[in-house]
Length: 304
Image (cartoon, rainbow, N blue to C red; front, top):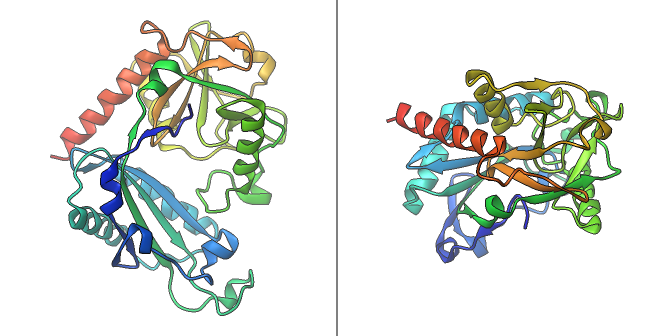
């Protein structure tokens, strides 16, 4: 079980991939070996959900995409409306309307030679849109996930701003590998000051004495679902605090959950060797997940 466990859909075999406005079969979709993203992880990306023909929270996703691009001095060269048109063209071409996860990738483009300096780049960005029929395995919510501490930590802004959604994911990949070796589905990563920051691929919340606790957000990805969760808590008078805290501060918590675009709100059933109550129907985690799903429904209605 993991935060990205999904139900395999055979229809994905015939889904066409958009590469720079042209469509290719899944097994024929290729990018140049001189692409900056392939060579160096130089680019930005977003994961976007399509529900009932609506791109959920698309405004926030594109805001983060462009903020990340600005942060690494990447000129996308397209307006947000152009990106939406390409996404919609991809969905229309594939006749996709529901339960779709879209991976949007923008690299700095091709290089004349394998060299890190952007002066070696020739031509425009490379834009890739990968749509897939992708539903979360329901056992993820039923059984929850197991998380625990790893040694890999989050960088600060002077190294690589962790709030940017870039293709440079080695920091998180190494944490994921370490978590797997320890038998965890997700690894809890500290910031450079020893405070809990995030998990390797999701944002993280703890519940202790009916109070929800999450990091300050300074050293974790600027998660869309994380932001929505905090908003939902405020709207519904649920105590939620962004602050610095250590593992010792929450080691006796009653519940925990992680958030992300694909899985939404996923309960944590085990914190290292401690069983939690997060998967119970009466849990605060389940209450917040229900409110989150309602927020998505309200968003969909507002777009119709």
